[in-house]
Length: 69
Image 1 (spheres, helix red, strand yellow):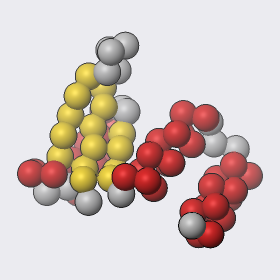
Image 2 (cartoon, one colour):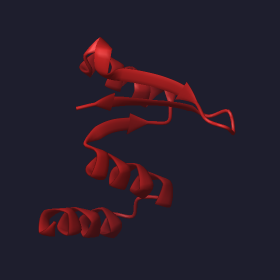
Image 3 (cartoon, helix red, strand yellow):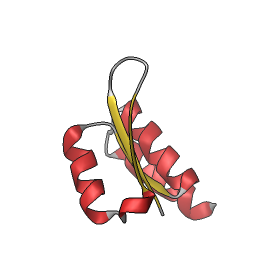
Image 4 (tube, rainbow, N blue to C red):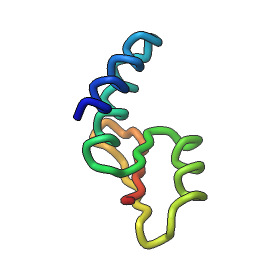
C-alpha cells in the first residue's frame, strides 16, 4: 500500500493528466495493462498472450483494450 501511494504521488508531481492517473490507478488495482488508443493497444497486444488480451469500444466510441496479468 505504501508503494502505491509513493508511485501515485510521484506521478502527480510529474504532471500527468487526470485520465492518465485514472488508467494508472486502474492498472495498479486490477493488475492488468489497460489502453485507450490504437498505439497503446498495439503495444499491449504484442506483449500479451492472446488468451489474456481483450478489445472493446466504449459507449462514447473510444477504443479500449486490456491484458490480464
